[in-house]
Amino acid sequence: MSQPKTAVLLVNLGSPDQPTPAAVRRYLKEFLSDRRVVEGDGIMRLVWLTVLNTIILTFRPRKVAKLYASIWDQDSPLRLILNQQVAALQLALQKTIPDQDIQVFSAMTYGNPGLSARLEELAQAGYTKILVLPLYPQYSATTTAPIYDLIARFQQQARNFPDIRVVHDYHDHPLYIRALADSVKAFRADHPAGEKLVLSYHGIPQEYADKGDPYPEHCHRTSELLAKELKLASGQWQTTFQSRFGPKAWLQPYTDKTLEKLPEGGVKRVDIICPAFSADCLETLEEIAVENREVFMDAGGEQYRYIPALNAEPGMISLLVALVKQNSCGWFCQTCNNNELNERNDAS
Image 1 (tube, helix red, strand yellow):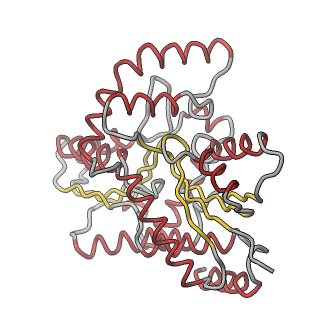
Image 2 (image 1 turned 135 degrees about the vertical axis):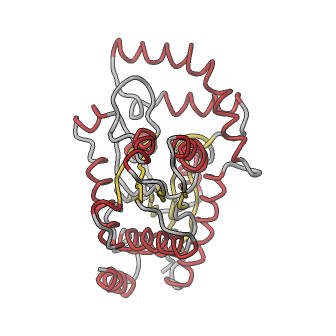
């Protein structure tokens, strides 16, 4: 009996195709038109779409394109790293589950390669089992939920479709926490440690959290587990939120405002890490590593160091392998499932 064709889809948010105003405009239009990203119905929806199409998409793309150009290297860092993660996971799965033919692919919620097109491509190619692995450690209705939406639309339009599973989150997975801790330890082994470790997460509007989005709780749990793993005292670390947009209140404390105040409180040397980002991108390489560094140094800081995202580092790939095994129970041999349980117990 032949094995069913199985695919793993690593999905990240997205990126423009080029660092140009036209490409950024197309990307922002798709991204900011999503009801999950900017909520609102009726009149509020019409008001938002009017503002988006007449103001934001008129003026913002040129500025954002310049920022992308400052970090662009043949392609966007996010897409380059996603491809590296796909290649590394493919190799790792071939080594750890050699008797299974599992193919790994990339996809984006917005931009290319699009998730909808990828699902259709895999279905036409005969894949009957697809594990979708969103690269968001902490679940949010603004990031992970749109992936569920796209899958649902794909299924609604098909008479028959593959068995599709989605990894909901991994914010407290032992291998994720260990990978983060190892990255901090490795970085500080080569650099003088800062007086405080700032853990900066992408923000969401406060009203989304008030309506029940579990994202802030997931972020704080990640921070607590990481601080515990690193054996940090309460005054040696702090959780903050970055990338707010628009006039409404977002999750606080804000990263930039926190960095602005730390020097006057006597903290002159900081290390900063972004645990919500599985790959370095505009929000880490430009906003955190450049813009927020200027904020901190201009306020009297003396040392500011950004700790890179996990990207395609071995710890990240080990985590992805574990997530694939854990979320494919029943698809593969019982031996693989038992081995996965043993690995998780060992990590705990």
